[in-house]
Amino acid sequence: MDIELMLKVYPFFLEAAWVTILLSVLTAILGLTCGALGAAARLSRFAVLRFLGAAYVSVFRGTPALIQLFILYFGGPQIGIQLDAFEAGVIGLGINAGAYMTETIRGAIISIDKGQREAARTLGLSQWQTMYKTILPQAARLMVRPLGVNLNMLIKATALVAAISVVELTYTAQRYIGSTYKPFEMFLLAGILYMIIIYLTGRGVTWLDRKVQIT
Image (cartoon, rainbow, N blue to C red; front, side):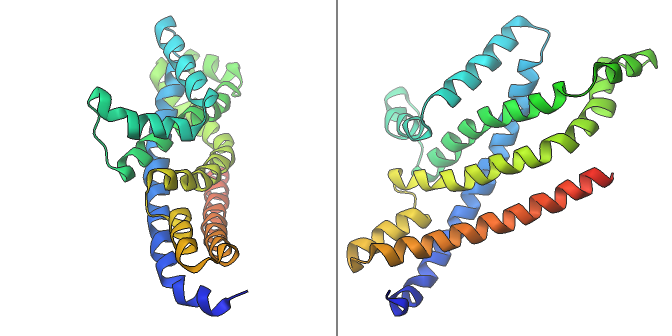
């Protein structure tokens, strides 16, 4: 193993790791937004919204994320959607992650006993107040860890954007393999940085879960 080479290229991999982190954060924000909207649609009393929510989940969970990225980045210009590689990566992965988060959020909400809703309505709370003050605080305790799993999957999925030339960890490893012919060292270095990012994210999710359980 060429440790000297790994130390030499490490600063460039660290720079790429910040791109991976930024991509993960922006994608997670978009994914949570799409997930919340998708869950609201799936739980709506309107059949059209329920159908649209179910279709969204079915399409984006039923097709590979890489294909979705290719359609958005390479096919988008044909229908007037001009995005650079980073923007396409954020939007493509965010919408895909949102489909999984939709079911996580919806599952947490529907797991709350119906008696809670009935009690809140009996006390004179509106449907919105019941959801905001009674259901969501309890559902939050149930959804933090599953959303944390979704987030870990999302961080690892950011490697897919290397296929559309976003200069993140995987793309950087591939680029240096071409000049060093050292695939083991380059992918090992990228893997170590992925593990650090995911470990720190997991610690953050654990802390948040404890805070939510206490409140």
